[in-house]
Amino acid sequence: MNLVDLVQTLTSPHPLDRYLELVRPTLTMREMRAEITHVRRTAPGSVTLTLRPSRQWKGHAAGQYVRIGVVIDGVRHARCYSPVNPEGGRDRSLQLTVKAHPGGVVSQFLYRDAAAGMVVDLEPADGVFRLPESRPERVLLISGGSGITPVLSMLRTLADESYLGEVVFLHYAKSPELVPHRAELDAIARRHGNFRIELRHTSRSDDVANRVDTDASRAELVPARDSGHFDYDELERVAPWFATAQTYVCGPRSLMSAVRAIYQAERLDDRLHTEAFGPSVASIDAADVHGTVSFTASGRSTRNNGANLLEQAESAGLTPEYGCRMGICLSCTAIRRTGGTRNVRTGETDSDPDQPIQLCVSAPVGDVEIDI
Image (cartoon, rainbow, N blue to C red; front, side, top):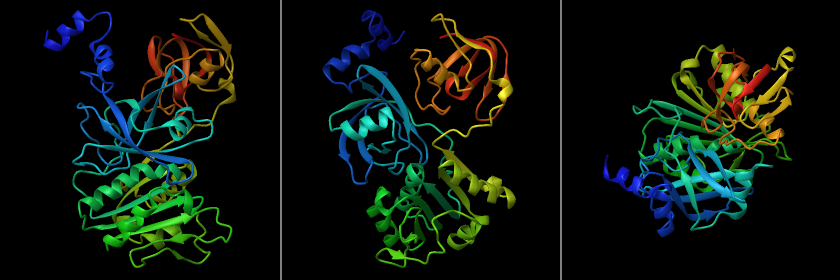
């Protein structure tokens, strides 16, 4: 038994970190936390937080996500966000840009109430959506809406490394005002002649797209043929060399599907890397929507309505722990005792008894018993 384990035993029933946080919230031995040091609200509907993680923080790779936890009205909530700062920063800070989604409990709370001095729980960076250690010769970054965050980290990392290859960053937003970190994007384009920043706005009244590139010191409007929607012609215009590049995409499902369809048709699947900020959902078979969902630990049950098990548990008045609600963070894992479930992302079904499943991406197929 090491010293920390010994002290943990002596402080039972509470873990050592419960006592250390009374001295300072970020003073912990095992649990990682972060203090918010700066808050900026520079784009409508979004907030950028700079955090100072505790000593356990090991950094992130550009494109990865972190899971943070906040307490709201006495209830702990966890969500996954992608850092926007470049990897390998010397000051060990962490920067998150959070879009306040309608009905988003955590995002609305952070947008409204985040302030310097607030402490949040933090977990190590994770995820396979990341730049390779050996940088490719050409990089195409495509994002839409709040999907900008992981690819912005990639762009900033390449800029900090004085990357010599060719880079195009194509981002879709409803309007120019909704593009976070716009001034920094302009600065990167001006400083790096091999970087081109292409911004497309999908709801402009004059039906034009805004384009910023390394040849312009200010924004330049281009003709209405750049309608702000992705297609093969747009891909050819911004990156005619895309077949020889590595492409990283994060954004709404419609954008992801459009990019994926082109790369599949061109047989370039191995050059496309994607990260969705919402789960892709397989079609629901009406034949599966029947039976009863029983939550054995609480003694409650509900008729199967076809929704995922997390939503059905909440409708039954239960409050299972959850985090990302998209099958990443594993917070909502529970044991399926009997019955079958369908993975809503892949459509695959499974009925082995006493198996752990993720409630947020599992829907019941007929009668099912879940241990919550």
